[in-house]
Length: 250
Ligand SMILES: C[S@@+](CC[C@H](N)C(=O)[O-])C[C@H]1O[C@@H](n2cnc3c(N)ncnc32)[C@H](O)[C@@H]1O
Image (cartoon, rainbow, N blue to C red; front, top):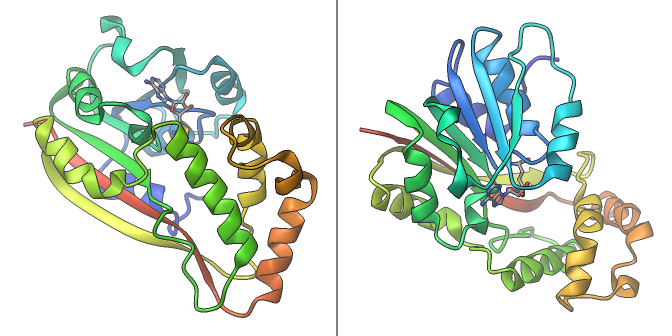
């Protein structure tokens, strides 16, 4: 499958000149979706290392098929603050939806900067869905589901507004910010939108923080009810806001 030109992550990585032959670190790689994109961009002469503290997510990442011509990503379990020196240095360090979970994002970026070659880039994508949902007509179930996620993240101490802090974070960490962007992620009635599945994955945390009960969420029918709401409501719906930053090591 060709790389999607409309995907925010792909465009951010391509605009940051991530390309053939580069050695790239994917921080907080989770189940490896971004690592897979990177592997195709750097091609077989390049290298991708994905690190994450969650073994279960890495097991999924290791199962992803590698398309012909792409690099074979290597996945390592570790905390971003305890990266082994044996990892070596990278042309680029990339992360998506990971800095918002760090208690001290400046410290995290400084630690990662030690693994970046001089002149190398950091490319991070973070999200803020407190600005959404936005629509002319109400989408009450979508709004409710997003509030569950926001409240869960707030309980966990995540920085829900990190997009607005990216310029400061990377500057304070000593990097030169070259690109900062934000984009509304818009849904039309016919576009697949897996909000119900995201809620399913987060359900234990939503319940543990007392944000909602299993009965209130009704996860078995949630995705179908969300799909019906989008089908039956005229107009488009903005479900999330993506922020991207590209910063260079001097
Ligand atoms: C929301 S997921 C994003 C996964 C992936 N980047 C993506 O966009 O598909 C955040 C990931 O960051 C990882 N993570 C958070 N803090 C970390 C840390 N200090 N060291 C390593 N991994 C971390 C979590 O384990 C989780 O897999």
